[in-house]
Length: 364
Ligand code: KG4
Ligand code: ZN
Image (tube, rainbow, N blue to C red):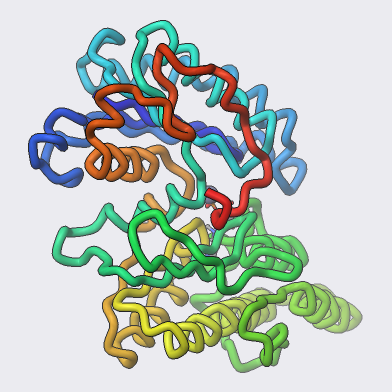
């Protein structure tokens, strides 16, 4: 059994997968391979502050993780002794939060003398794209649009675990653009999902919000959008409170500007790099408009499109398990001999692997 642990931000997550069955040829989505998966959201804890408070988040992981771990063992009807490997997020993320998961994982690995895989959070998001039907999975070379609360990147993958970042944000991440626009509209925390719900009833053409750096294919920029939303809100409020229709229309217009910026640059990159598959992943990939527009563009471009179900787009531990299984599949001897490769600990390897708050995917 492989235990995966994710604590990089404000979700504590534990999943358990049957690594023996996977190694014997079963697919991760075959019945019974994922034995347990739990995500404990800290949304209510951070709600009064309108954003994640790092110290509170870390403390909550300390409280939640042991409980989740016990529950995951119960859910999968296994005991600690059945664990044969541990995967954990090493970074990037909030340092204090990462440390909780990493120290917990190291302790299990050390005490059971089992290998530990200390993994990259964004690589985990990319491998969430394995959590779709086998026939729908990506073909290399592929291009991933990775959009979360902290990252907005276009990543080219010529082959397994090779990453070239071809576009990134100059300022806010796409998730932040959703969250900050939502805050300006007085929508409940977390803003992204709330704004996307309101957008469903709004008119996207009522306000024309700017698309950041339209002529730079290697950058995204969302700070101008935030200022533009603020201006519209102020102007409308000068005539009284925002009506419900105003909120719906601003939501739809802001969502459209964010999604169009993401999709336009993704299409440009597809034309330039000719990938066989387009991947969409990270928390913002749960956005229905983004999913639909990416799917349509991929169809027009004649390439396949892969997006995980929404529950595996936002932070979870099953995406790490999916990555860990692929690593094991591609290097079975390394795994079997605990042969201390970078990021992989065995009982005979140093325990010095540390949490990394900032860790570009290209430096993996
Ligand atoms: O990947 P994730 O769960 O955590 C990070 O690693 O950051 O991404 C969280 C981000 C938040 O900014 C959240 O507002 C956004 O994903 N998000 C959405 C939606 N669901 C989550 N943004 C737009 N529409 C959604 N439906
Ligand atoms: Zn994430």
